[in-house]
Image (tube, rainbow, N blue to C red; front, side):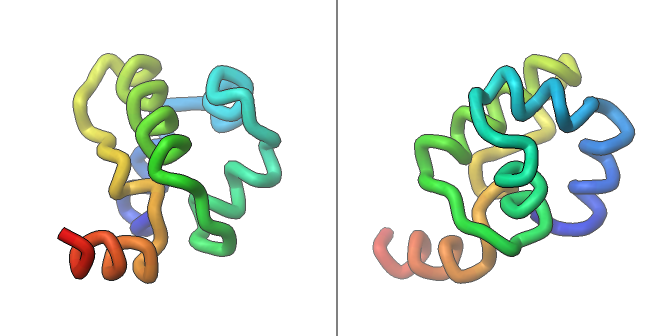
Length: 78
């Protein structure tokens, strides 16, 4: 996740709540958000939907939860 987007998310949502609702480990969520770990498109979509629900916005997209390598592969596959 880009640093500005992560900062925004942290201001709006307790990451523990996001992890609980997404049914993933908090450490794994931290790793995803800090681009230290990859997540599937399925989990990226789930995280974006939950983040939007918790913030009452449409600010978050699955791409926000994917790292740069995954995004490049996604774009070349399309």
